[in-house]
Structure formats: structure tokens, C-alpha cells
Image (cartoon, rainbow, N blue to C red; front, side, top):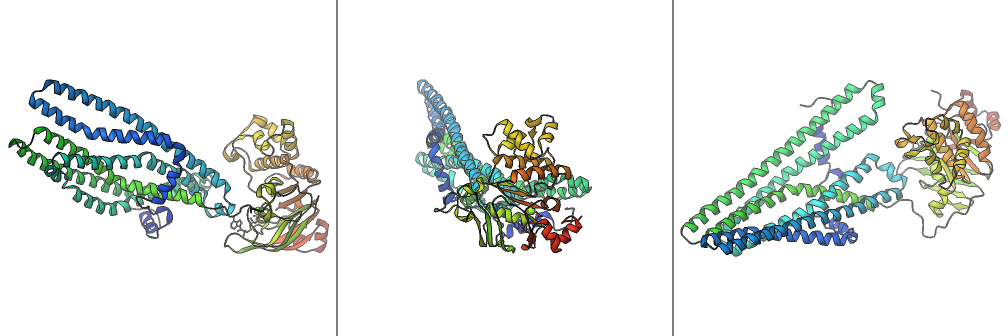
Length: 605
Ligand code: ATP
Ligand code: MG
């Protein structure tokens, strides 16, 4: 059935369930902790909830009354009471009006309630994600986070806006009908309700099978979306490697597995419906026969029988609905669990209560015996010590993976050192507020990021108060002014999502302009010129020499041509400093740097 190599996808999915990977475990159908947390969000939508709940109670109660009206009407007909019949008909219209009003109240206000709660949860998640430390994003894939924010909130939306209401309505209806039937005629009521215990047993057994089938179906569709996501993001590489056929074949496999999983789920769904229907129909027939004979013998008014039959019809739908909603609710509870779990993740890097602001930086950056490892990984920086004096431009050179970017991340405290300390003007970066630290450090990361908006907006992010002239001045200093002017709309050119319509070099230069506009006392450029041609690089280096004046400037580079101008070069190898000195000094020493320089590039390709 499955094409493609490796174990069939359904088998993979099944082993994922057996290993109980956290995303796939269905939650309890009622989780007090989650419901408790949801209620914490109710405060702001209290009135909508009260109106909505009133609507539900009104509607359900009125629905319970309608068969009774049929009963009265039948009795009036049999008695030939025309006035009574008219009054009963009017009463029926009254009840219907009441139901319509209740429905309006319920639908509108419960949807406002759900939307209000979800707005708060979404905003909460969004701002919480912004507070989390980078190590969190190292551990969690962006795709997974996105799916939490979107799918799980959608699931929770179903829970809040539909499921809870349906469960409430169904339970009230079932209990209300049972009570009314017992009051009307308890023997007939017992007959009518006799099939319910059997129905409950069947549904419980069915659940154990259905649950598994539904998890498989859900995982299968997740695999399909993962596959689409990966293939579409890698479409350039795919076309270049002519991998299309392979990808399509792989996709067909997961897509088919999805179909199979869903077929199974549908089969189970299709089975439960008629089974519960058979039982309700059974009790319908029993009541019809028994009640019919009672009516024939004159022991029961015909209206009684009619009302009973109507009640049996009305009780079957909520029971069926509860049975099929079970899995749905478990799934929503699981989503709720994941959302609240995410909201509870504490940022690892936090301002200590005693942290003060970092005063305006004038002095130096000092690394003292700094060692560092990402999470529980291996140590990648070993006993690093160096000082960057005020007004000095220091370059860090080293091969790919030597630890250059990690040094930059530590200065802005995206991560914390495992040993040693980093001091700025004598203040440990760990004991000042993150905001006061990062405000003073202009950091152009290795993978520059632009937001959607115009180029001018993106540069102005560095300093929202800057005038247009200042924006242009920064762009000139970054060597990107002429490039922008050559674009169709100049500074108003819209940057696509993540800057997709610009070349990597252009993006890098715009980021550089943004940082220049920030005008920070400390400037860290991580490979800021790695994507531009040597000519442009020359222009930038010249203006950087000016920009660097009076600032602390740390330049990280692959290309040695970018670092030769630096006052001092720190040569990093496997996370250790092997040499430091100015370009001529290092050349004279004829060590590692000299050998690299002879090859002209650190990473000859
Ligand atoms: P390049 O010149 O390619 O930019 P680099 O010198 O900047 O390299 P770093 O990015 O500092 O190197 O990486 C140093 C080491 O740390 C590498 O071995 C890398 O595998 C590891 N590393 C980098 N980032 C992470 C991360 N987020 N989580 C775990 N390990 C990481
Ligand atoms: Mg790097």
C-alpha cells in the first residue's frame, strides 16, 4: 500500500503514540487545572458570559417545555375544547419567541466571551514569547511554536465557544427530560430510559478504539503539513537538485497515510452513529407498543404517549453528540495544556531584583576567564580573556564554528557565561538590566532580519525619532544610500516578508544603517560585510573607521581583508584565543594568522 522507503508512515505514527511524545497525548476529558486557568481569563468578559449562560438556560428549558404543550394541545383536541386549544397554540408561539430571543442572546454573548478569552490568551502568548531567552528558541522549533500559537488556540476556541456550551446544553437536556418523564409517568419513563445504560457502555468501549484512530488521523495530518512546509521552504534547493519527483513521491506516501488514518476514523465514527440510533429507536418502539396498548385500554391519555415519543427523540441527539464530542474535547484539553505549559515557561535570563541600569558606557569591555556551553552541550568557549579599550576597534577572526558569534551573543547577554565574567566599565553584564545593556550595544547579527514595511521604516527602527535626513545619513555611512536610490521606489520600497525581495548583501547593509542610526557607544558587527562585494566592503570599512571613532567596536569576520584595519585582532581557534596583536604584529609572528593570511581566506572553498 505504501510506496517509498523506510517503515510505513502509519507505523512511524503508531510508534510515536506508543513512545508517548508529549504533543500527541490526549488529555483528560475534563482537566480541572485547565478549566481553572481558563476561568482566570473570564474576568474581563464577565457580563457576556452571564448573558450567554442565561441564554443557554432559557433556550434549553423552553425546549423541554414544547412536548408538554403538545400534550396539552392533544388533550384539548380530544376534549373538543376550542378556546383551550387556541390558548395552547398562543402559548406555543410565546415559547417559540422566547427560544428565538434566548438563541440570539446565547449565540452572540457566548461568541463574545470566547473571542475575549482567546484575544487575551493570544496576546499573552505573543508577549510571553518575546520575553523568553534565546535558549528556549534553540530547543523549540519555530514551526512548533507557530503551531501552538495557531492550532492550539483554534482548538481551545472550539472548546470555549462550542464544546463547553454543547456539553452544558446536552447534560441539562438529558437530565431535564429524564426528570420530566419520571414525573409524567415513571413506569413509561423507566422503559424509555432503559437503553441508556447500554448506550453508555457501548460508547465507553468505542472510545478506546476511536481515541487511537483519532490520534493517528491527527498526527497524519500534522506530518502532511510538516512535509508541505519543508518542501515549499526548500523549493529552490529542490528544483536545483531536481529532487521534485523524490519529494512528490515522499509526499504521496504521507498523504496516503493520512487518507488511511482518516478512513479508519471515519469508519469508527460511522459505526457509533447507527448503533446509538438503533438503541434510541429501540426504546421508541418499546414505548410506542407499551404506551399504545395502555392508550387502547384507556389507561393513558394519548397526549401522554405523544409527549413521551417526542421526548425520546429529543434525548437521543444530545446523547449521540456527547459520545462523539468526547475525543474532540480531549483534544482541546490537550491544546489547553500545551498553551498553558508554554505560558508557564520562565525566561532563563532575568533581571535580578537588585540589578541597576548600566550607566552610559564610556570605558571598556572585559572578558575574564570566560567559558561557555549552549545548554547541556559541550563547552565551546574555553577560558577567554581580553579587553577592548574605549575608542578601540578589535576584530575577532577564526574559522567557521570557532565561537565568534557566541562571543557576541554573550556580550549582549542572549546567553549567560558558564564560568568567568564579562564586565562593561566594571559592571558585570549579569547584574545590570537587560534593556539598559542592549540599548547601548548596536549589534548587527550574522543573519540580519528586516520587518515588513518600507526600507525607511526599517532603518528608522534604530531610532524612531530620526528625521529623514538622519536616516539617509546613516544609509550613506553604511554604503547603502546609492543602492536604495536605484530601487524602484527608493526609500519607500516595501520590504517583503523577512526582506525576501532584497539580496542578502542589501539586507545586511540596511541592518548596518539601522544600527548606525541607533548611535550606540558599543558596536558589534558579526560578519556585517560578508555578503557584499569587495568594492562596497571598501566603502563600508572606510566609513566604519569614522563611525568607530570614540566607540568600542568589535568586528567579527571571515574575510581577513575586513580585519586588517583593526587596532587589534584576536585569533580564535576551537573556542580558544591562540594569538592577539595588530595585523603587522601577527604577520611578523608568522603563526596561525600568518598562515591564514597567506591563504587569503579563512575558509578557502
Ligand atoms: P561562523 O564563522 O560559521 O559564523 P562562529 O565562529 O560564529 O562560526 P559560533 O556560531 O559561535 O561559531 O558557534 C560555535 C559553536 O557553537 C559551534 O560548534 C556551533 O555548533 C555551536 N553553536 C552555535 N550556536 C548554537 C546554539 N544555538 N545551540 C547549540 N550550539 C550552538
Ligand atoms: Mg558566526
